[in-house]
Each structure stands twice: as C-alpha cells, then as structure tokens.
Length: 354
Image 1 (cartoon, rainbow, N blue to C red):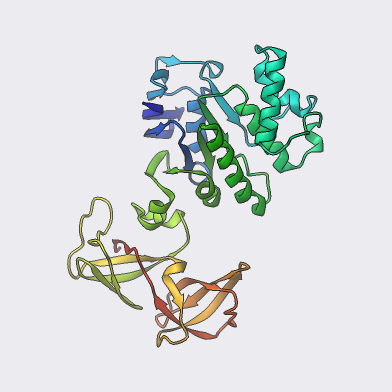
Image 2 (cartoon, rainbow, N blue to C red):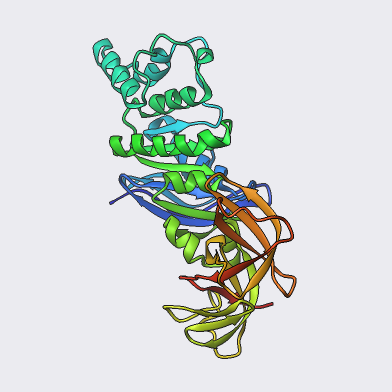
C-alpha cells in the first residue's frame, strides 16, 4: 500500500491554475523530491499535501485515508505529518529540548525526555538540549527543526526548501546527512527544492515540475541520462544541444563524429523512433566531451570555471558552436588555446530538430 498517493491534483488561485493534474504515489520509506524553477507549483503542491491549501480537483490519500478532495479537507494536525519549513520556524523563547518536544505534550514527561534525547543523538546534537536557537549555527538549527518534525513519529515528513538559507558548500553535505537520518528512522519524505544537487543528494525519486505539471517522475540517474523532454534535459544537469542527422536506428552524425547508441534513437516523447535523414538536436553533457591530447579534433578554450578537482571548459568548435567539457584540473589550459577532444557518449539524447 502506498504511504502517499496523489491523483489528478488541481489547485488554482482565481483563474490562474498553479497545479495542473499531478499524480504520483510513494511507498513507505521512500524519499522523494519535487524539483523545479520558481513558480512551477512545487511549494503549492506540498502545501496541498500538508493540508494548508485546499484542492479544486483530484484526491490525496495518506495510508489509504482520503485527506484532500474538492469536498473534503482534513486539517493539518490530523494528517500525522511532520513539516520542516524554509526558515525552520523554531521558537526563539524555547530551548532546543522544548522546541523538539513541542508536539509531544500529550506524552508522559519521562517518555518526552527520552524521545528528545534519542533525537538529539540521531541528528548529531547530544548535549545541546539547553541551548537556544540564536546560539546555534544555521546547520544546527536545521537539524533541530528536523528533530522536531520527527518527534511525534509522523507517517510523512515534508521539507520546504530547508537548505535555502545555508551556504552552497553546506547544502549538499547537510542534504546527505538528512537523508541518512530519514532512512534510519524509516520515514517517508518529500523535499521541495529548485537545487538539483540537493535533490540528487537526498532523493530516491524526483519529480521535475514545470508550469504546474510533473514533466518526468524518475530516478536521478534516469533524469540525467534519459530525460523525457527538452525541459528536463535542459533543467537537470548541464549540457548544450548540437545539430545532428540520424544515420540509422543506432547512430547519429554530429559535427564531432558519429555517435552510437545501445538502444534505438528516439526523437522525443510522442515523436517515436527517428528514421534515416531525420534532423535532430543532440544533447552533449560535459562528461560526454573528453579532453584527449592525441585526438585530431580540436576546440578553442573560450571560458573556464575552476572547481577544485575539475575545470569546466567552454569550448568553441570549428563551426563556432560551443560545447562543455569537464576536465581534471591538472589540465590547466589558457584562454584561446586549442585542445584535443573526443566524444565518449554512453546515452544518446536526441530531440526532433527545429
């Protein structure tokens, strides 16, 4: 039985439809992510699941119990959901222990204290119970907010952009730590974010949203290597499109050579398999373009971004088109230098040419 199930969810403000026919289901223990740009409807959808927003179409079930429909809206406090907000929403006048215990007032004192101690250890903050929120770092406040959400043993935890106020280096590390905590607790969770690195670090399944719809619900691996449409291909990961011509079911010719595919090349959803001579746009990821001094193919360095272990190069081809290449940082080339490259493409991603 699914822990959470959405069927045809629609929500609108006035005449503006924000969520448009969203359906998905989560098994117990799954960590999912709603990923998309600002304004795509992901936070509104999360608020519908939490019970903060009504729905005008469709149904939401939690453990086979109907909690939202046009004619029914179970209050948030009756949904047995834990919530981690963007600003953490910790009570500044309460210490850490009392913040965590806020939802446990119906339990005996000894049981409350034991649960708080258990959660402080779980989130890596033993001994912090008498601290106040203003005495904690952003990352520590985030852990306290998570502990408070987990305290009542909810069936489902919702996280609304929980890392957005943290610096970039801390976000991905904390996302991985939060994933470990949720997995240890066996909690089903949904994260909302616009940051794909957070999504990849946390989620088992990701739904990429655009204009109120889920464009693709899939594993992080499939979203990157098998995007279903141009929006997903462009939003997830980095890359550029270059024109190509289909030679046969398993090969396509591009400026840099012939790409071979292990599966028949399809132009895009709804277009079907591409035939010989079909014009396509082929997505090349930075890891598809390999630096190779021995290659006769040359490209000019026009931009470079140092990333520690790697350098992300923007390279201009003979045609004037540009591609990206991720190269180990000991290959430090100058602007304007021509370097050797070759293609190493495991997944040919092609869409019908304009």
